[in-house]
Length: 240
Image 1: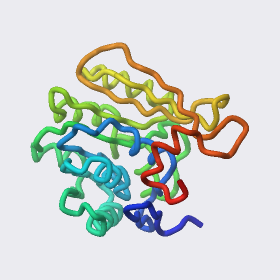
Image 2: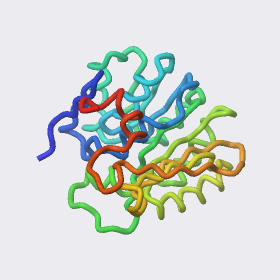
Image 3: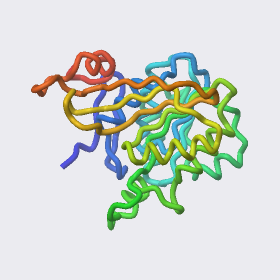
């Protein structure tokens, strides 16, 4: 049974009320997204609040907002924000993305999202878990995410998204339709010789050849974390 919380070096993520728990690929997204110069950051579909909390630790100057439509997850994220060292820089909006867009927020320098991505697989009987895991017209669609980012990113702003490869290919089409283009693709693998697990792709308004980087989580033939993983997650994981 999963723990009711995940303890990081500088903060704790309580997660009992959330369908989607803290996971490795989301932590990698939080550790690698290029947010160093962002003054305003938005985490769409924050769940436990993980990405917003990691952003607050990495960027001590940013104001960070988060949107979460699930009532229980939003309450959990708000509590995690309040208990963190950065409560004054974190703000939770417990509404669907469309409702948040209707408030005409000030544009963001960086938007983070680990969106629902199971498009064709069997849906869970747990409605909360289905909303968190499956893209559908009644949750967050790729077109809605891309359209929001195109509307509410600053001119030099960036969007970083975590998806499996087939879904990322679909999302890139939606992003292109919204005039957002990949600038950096980070491809996660279990080990150097294993198939890709997830893509973490950063988008901007400027079309240019995208850099691509293969990132194995573990050393070849070993359970040891890779050197880049230790460096990126060292500020967060207790065991590193």
